[in-house]
Length: 219
Image (cartoon, rainbow, N blue to C red; front, top):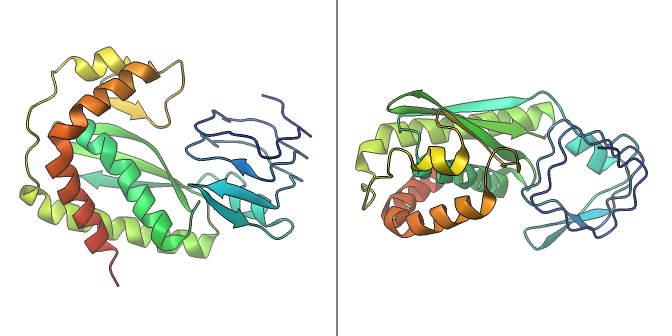
């Protein structure tokens, strides 16, 4: 996708697929990039005075946005002793949100997950910060991984199990789920409906999971 020198001032790019997009020399000032897939994008010489993130304005000095958001081959992995399910689908964004709150917005993005075994799921995260901060981010993810795996037996069970073929019907795949989803990988409306239906039954489990994540990041 060639968006070089594009004027994207105040653009709503929420959940946009910007994979490998060329934004050389573009102006992204005021754009909203919430949940956008920035994998491999090129932002050399980009202008960006600020972005809107989760309703909050984040300002950048000249060149700061490019330095912070330039794509780097930096992926962190977390292995949870939980089966691949909609619970782990929620777990990834919850972990990313908690780390971003602790580390600074835009430090990390949930990329996807993969079943390693019937009871083990590998979660993958993209790190956007500089090397020193990446080490801090990795340490936080490692601590979350440790706490969840130590306390996983204490999680309340969901009210009902997902039908074995439901993820495949919705996602078109079973062993891995890429986040954010692209139109070629998922029917977004069906996915949203399924997650909304399941949220009520997962609520106690999610609350327990969120509490574990928050406890792991306490000083």
